[in-house]
Length: 292
Picture (cartoon, rainbow, N blue to C red):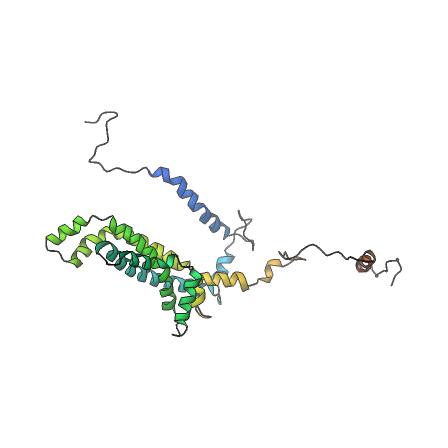
């Protein structure tokens, strides 16, 4: 029997109010929506909202001879390999740090999380010095292993928190009933740790897919990941059609027009400008007004 104002039935699971999280979700998704809408603009420069809608940029992205599809597929392949390697290292290290008594627990923990503290440019340079003598520059495996150095500590942190949240009494109860370690891991630990493993895989994939420094050091001319291709396009690719029809293309390095100084500066300025004015009327003229 239900009464007004009575407490909630403890047998019914508590459902959190998801409406409170909708504003924050919309706030986080707003930049992605703006970028997506801007990609359909017909303007060569980013403009929001678009003046007109077009698919020309997507056609140019996948046109014949474009380097973008190869860079996108290589980044996806490298990210998948790095995710697999990071999960293997993450599960192994997290299990050892939470389910066993290591003699140097703090030292091992610091060693595993060390790549998060070291600057990425230093890590990339060290990986380059290791890969160059072995002739592995440009290899997807080498790039994936380099990304694993940065992605695996993130996976370890997530999986350590996940395994610490699992009640060890469940594993002890299964062991007391004759279950082996593999059976306990397969039937109890891994199913309970599945959400954490999925989160670790997602963060590892994003870390690898977005990595630039290690990819820049380990890539070659033929094997370029998507972040490196974006950097090369912004740095070296020049599209002359952007300024078509403009007399003076915009430049960030154009300063104010210099003024002549010193004795006779005004006369020199008039001598330089007035012939051009005279040519507009048919014949150049001297500062005195006489036709040349």
